[in-house]
Image (cartoon, helix red, strand yellow):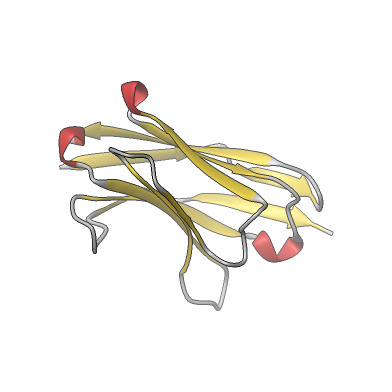
Length: 118
């Protein structure tokens, strides 16, 4: 099992920045990738960003490219999501996820609220 704990959400004005953190514990050696997803009220869950644990290759959703940056510190088993130039439409619950294989995410955090005011 892998446990994930997110932190760093909050309220920010449009144009501002926030950094989310996700700390993994447990069988972290089994992690192949970690990612961030978000879900706004009444909308489907949306892929935000992901990073391969070994090589550090990153992937981004179209709506956040150029504004968000995902990174990781392997020694801390922690992944970060730096969010810049935030927009009101970025408001959502952001959840961290970890996957043991290339296709699926097996573990999820509890989520952290990000609210961007206009």
